View (cartoon, rainbow, N blue to C red):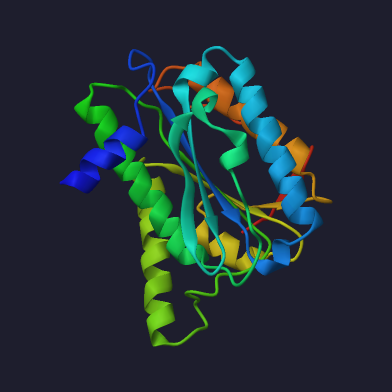
Length: 237
C-alpha cells in the first residue's frame, strides 16, 4: 500500500483538464550502442523534448516515459508531461546485452497502469504509443533460443499483437545499424523502419511533429502519419 502511494506522488497528473497522449520510448542502451550512436540518440531525445515544450498544447497533453534496456530494464523517466522532465536525469549507460523482451513487457505494463490513473481521475486519453529503438536482437528471449526463451518470446509477440489489434496502444519498431529487422518485423504489426545513416535528429523531429499532431486531434480521431522517408525506410513484411 505504501509503495502505491509513493508511486502516485512520484508521477503526478498535471493539467488534469487536458486529455493525455502517453508515449513510451524504449531505448536500447546495450554495449553495441556505446559511443556515437548513444550520443546521437541522447541529442535527438533532448531535441524531441525541446520541440514538444514549444507546442503549448502538446506540453500539457503529451506524457513521456523513457525505458532503457541492456542487461537490465529501467524506467528512467516515469510518465510525465514534457515540461516536467529534467533532461539531465536521462542517463543512458551503454553496456551489456539486450533485454528487449522484458523491456516491451514493462512498457505495456506501465501503459496499463497509467491508463488506470487516467480513468480514476476522469481524464480522457489518446491511444498510447510505444516507440522501440534498437541496433540488435533480444538476448533475454528469442524464437531460436531454448524452450523457455521461445515460450517467453511468444508471450511478448502475443501481448504486442493483441494490444495493437484491440486498440490498447500503437507499437512502432525502429532498427539502427545492424538491427535484426526480421525480429522487428515479427514483433511489430506495422512494418518496422530501418533508420538511415543514424538520422536520430530527423527521426525525433518526425516523431515530435507526429505526436504533437495527435495531441491536437480528437481522442477518437484516426491520425494519418507522414512518410518516414526523411530518416528511414519501412521494411516490407
